[in-house]
Image (cartoon, rainbow, N blue to C red; front, side, top):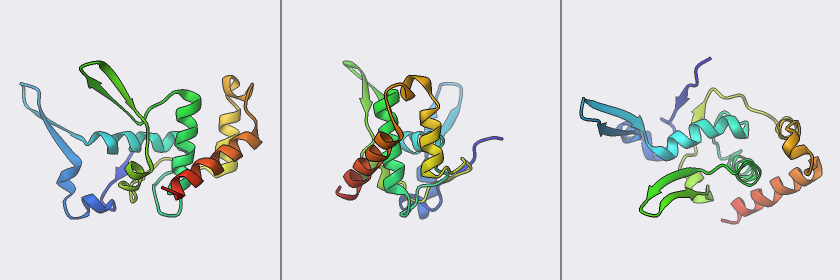
Length: 146
């Protein structure tokens, strides 16, 4: 099934959905793609097991992503600089900007998501369910206190 998404409920795009798109002229015509932060969050929804970013789940969405940053070495964004690649971590303020994003990713309960993480051998050898629950709580507190 193809990945679908809807950004029309994100506050900054409600009155101007054209702002979602960035125009590129590749020399042989114009191409459009969605802005990089939005694109990253669309795909990250599958990693964190949420189909949308809502006020009711944004703290746990953030917590799950932070755990993925820590365990899998993923970054929210990567940008080119004069010094090479810069890896940008997700911040609470960056995620808050995109409350309202919806996708057709499956939504997993906390228990289902933790079980998925623990099924991976390279992680399950040194992490426990209790540790993951503790990390989720820690990162949710970090989000709530931002």
